[in-house]
Length: 224
Image (cartoon, rainbow, N blue to C red; front, side):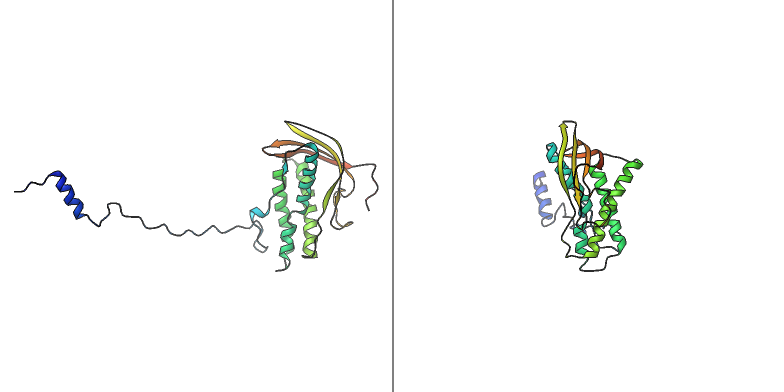
């Protein structure tokens, strides 16, 4: 009678299992369809993705640089969505409510990004006033069509007094808003020489507005 050693038995077992895997490969995972993009506007409006509503931030810089960044951010808000509305016009008639809805989304994005958290009535009223100005610009673009090239901008008239420390920046300057079409719209008197008082505090690599006040600036010729 032959004796089969443990090693021989193991070899025989392996031979019998030749061509068979002790660990069979798993079937490939099913294809997962990419998530359907979600528009921030109602279904009757053209598609606007979350990334399409992106506020202009205020980077850290010298006081004079920060003045320019503040005016650039406000200009960005007042004109936010103009390129989108321009692109809507060639393909379809866009319902009027889409402009209001886009202005509301812009307001949410800018007020929550450019400012420290404020939920009191005064701040909400301020944000609502800027939203109305943005909506005016969007409505003008919607009516005028793609040939409209101009956008409203802020112009710095002069820096009055500014300072900056590690804990914050204070700005005092005069500026005026130049609408795309002079004499049209209501701009909370920003289209006249205006004295700005702005306090900003650090937020990572950027600054956010903790206080802002505007009032008429004297000593300038009347804006036509």
